[in-house]
Length: 156
Image 1: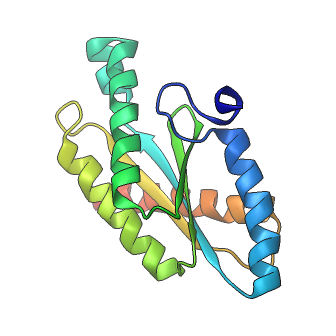
Image 2: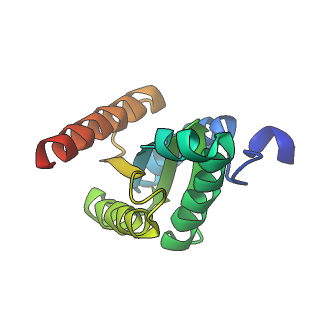
């Protein structure tokens, strides 16, 4: 079960574990009137360490990003690696505003880690779950990641 639910490189839950968590969390929180927030993270700039150090360079950055996410979240929060350079945080009992604070704290620590002279950057999409499907929730979060990337480009 460990192998089917966890990412071998980072030790975080994988896409399957993420999907199971969302499909369990949404109806539970709806039933009890609780809320949770979802933050998706896209790690950009991994090409720089990969070009410079080979695949090992990218593979070394990802576990460190995972450790940062775990250190900056609570024990009841869940961290997942859901794609090659994509992560997700499920934060029960957390409003969108609280989740944005966590996301910004994570972004700061990832930036301060200075992977490959700061070439690695984090884009976050934070949404609070509503009365919607898991697919709709993740679609909103992906749209928020895209908006964050655009805002970062505009600020550069």
